[in-house]
Image 1 (cartoon, helix red, strand yellow):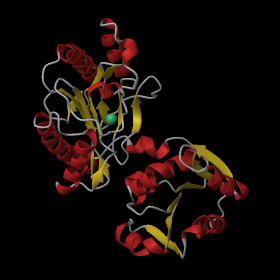
Image 2 (cartoon, rainbow, N blue to C red; image 1 turned 90 degrees about the horizontal axis):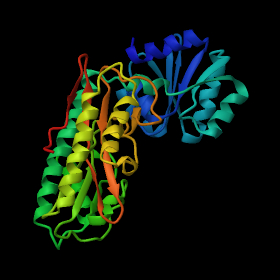
Image 3 (cartoon, helix red, strand yellow; image 1 turned 90 degrees about the vertical axis):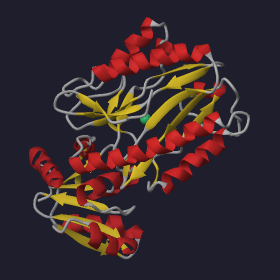
Length: 352
Ligand SMILES: [Mn+2]
């Protein structure tokens, strides 16, 4: 029996629910092995089922755990009906759905025929605690990211007056694929000069200038697992850069030092805020401290003011404090951290 689905079945017993349904790709992938874009996974106390359309029947046969019955439909549009029919045949009365994932239309459809019990972040809370294989994939994705970032950094020093943000972003995307990544974890953020003051910037045709602040935030995907790294650079001399850089680094180190299992996920965020407060920069730290990373680039736990719950062993999270000063620039430093049964290991090796 698949351990992950066993956990879901326990929740079915605990909440008196007959079946759990997910059509959210990262979650059915995690629970069944099926990597196709569309599918419906149904978990009951006994048997489990996956409903896929004609495009994916062979793929499902290759990938899906052998104890899951594959049910096919000819076309995508009949997947929901086929799922509801199956649930009816199985005499399901109470159906567990994913409040945080299911589309309103799907919800309305299922709630016509079944009593619905909403679960919130149920599969995500399992996904937050990575196993050995998952950690290996994340490490491989991070290794590729770090190699590409190194090359991108070198291009900066030869690119003054020449290279644009978009050119560097495209270079990053291409190199990730060339080095064995299956894709980018997200569109790379490459910002030069004052543009670094926008935390989530979109690259433009701006050309790199001597003395510019630079932010590169990027990640690769390997076997569906993501990585995430940010470094800030300065090409040439800029005394303001060094001063701010060291403050962000201090905030990051203090936050990392506070990370261990059993700590509230908001705690490392508060530690970073306190450091920025010391330098009167609290208002300039305008985003969360970090997030879980895995089958998605942003997962729970959220290390932010809105984060809930506790940090746990085998969480893989980012720690990415930043300060942003309009008309001057911004600095962000982001590492990936694995929580272990003592404290944590910083997975990112890139120099800071
Ligand atoms: Mn990040």
